[in-house]
Length: 129
Image (cartoon, rainbow, N blue to C red; front, side):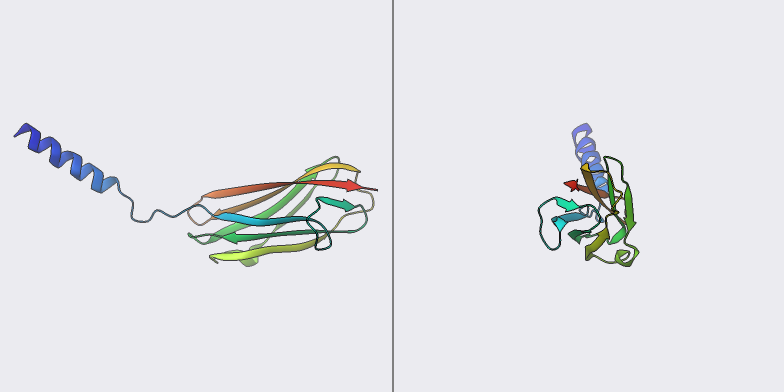
């Protein structure tokens, strides 16, 4: 009798712990950072930086952001047009100020779904004179 109770208890515990609403975290792919439509990780200050990424969120997108920081220039951008969608594209051209410090920067792309799951991708960027 004790063994039957343990088997039933384990079965109930297994079934009750199984979440039917499990969704995968967002996926960020095909990240491009560079000059024009290239993915060279470089830009000349005073010109345009191309940033692009594909996003897939099984649990729908809540927030998507691009953050650039490094040698003395910081840039942040939100993409509210992606909220509520299951997939989309970050595609923007950013004017890099002529006064931006020359040096190495990090491009950080972050996507959060409506369940609070966050995925992040990073790319390297060099700003030259």
